Image 1: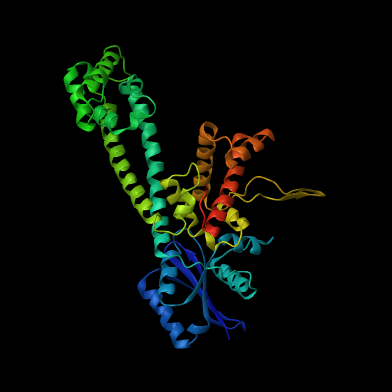
Image 2 (image 1 turned 90 degrees about the vertical axis):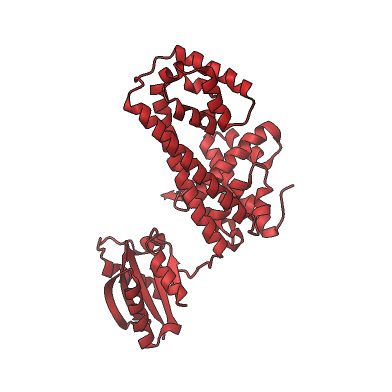
Length: 400
């Protein structure tokens, strides 16, 4: 006889139900908090029944909340299945809108006995788990930096509108510019400082010759002398700017530290050299791809990878008309989708300047001639990039 323990996972708690393939319910649906005592209580009940060897533990992947029970049962050698909630949602959709935690347990139990829940558990190596954790933190810090930089630019326009002209091509976010505006956060403050003081501030951050920074300081002071900021030097926005600069500097350090750790770990994986050999993909991009797709050779085909990234096309039928090439589903890993999109854009941009015979660039031009939008062309290039990566990794080869 076979048994299944189903968990309907929520934040900090789960509804547990234990049943057999004969329809016998050994543990009625009951709610337990996620803590050591309750997990051990369930474990002891299973051991008393002496059914561990023929038991499967089933739960949906629910944000991060399924991680605690998954870790407990896997560390105690239970056969554990964590499945995509889309599987349960699509199969259990009915006209009657009845949804309770008990009903969900029963539905998942029925799905399991009907063999509608695939046992596709992939046991990740520790290195891929660490890479994924670092990748998510990297994206979180990047998103935070983007918000802070936008606010930083607003405050710059209030305190010293011409400052952006002094540091072109995005260098306004570099350490030299950040340390300078942190020390002199208003045009009137700069106007009252000697050129030497301004120059030495920049020279202390970057080790270029002092004469270079004296010329730069003269330029900044000329702009400051003619500037008319939106706030005076006693405004709270001046203090806000100084505080924000400190936050940006600290977040940048943390992000760079995580980036270096990711690259170091990624270089230890078997597919790093295959992926980094692709024209336009550097160490960081390769590390991010591996962090999200993990061991790409575990997929059986390209369609599985596309689906996992949400790049698979939707199919829409109306009467006799069937569109097999609808918009992408966007139901998979959004981080992987974003990385592949950005990599495709980089490859196309570099190829336009350096290698117009590159297959990715040729494919991009083909889609463009078909009248597709720029983003649609790059999305199509993302699927082609996946095919290239998959082929290289499966054949353990590099791109010439």
